[in-house]
Image (tube, rainbow, N blue to C red; front, side):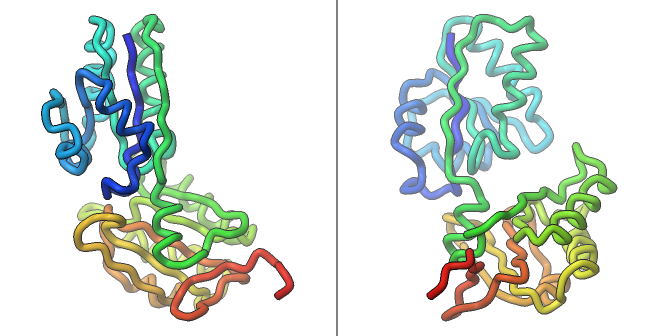
Length: 243
């Protein structure tokens, strides 16, 4: 009885780790959000899969635990890293709810969006940074607002996940306004859409310009700090070396 909880990275097969691919091949069932299953299905075309739409995370994890309890090996996948806004924590919570069944769990890390977006934009996360999701589905907006304000005040570069959706079309603008109350509106920023997938695009701009941009759930945003500048069209945060 075993569950692999696998971070599949940004989506491109070349950015899936060898350990993740081995675990996928070792599994009897692959469980995940359909969009993410579609990205890796060609690598394991004969595997049985189970998927749910957005907001079906608990159902997915329960199905994985119930299937694993029959003796099968199950892979639960997350884009990026499974332990960063992914399924790893929820699997442990579901196992606890089922009475901590004797199912072995192995977490296999993947490249999270912060790292992959930073690589596309340049080197904006070379010093201390914070990662904050703007999704208020499970976290109150009031708490998100406090985190944004304090991270900016503390001088962190800030990586933003889930910056916008159809229901939250103005959340990135609101976040930028909060941050601009603490740091300069000319602070260099950038974003990447569809990282490592077809249609990838990126842009470097100021914090004030970022507030007016329209992005989606498949976009990762990086907001620099006072040590961030643009070098050869790349976003770079200085760590303080003397050059």
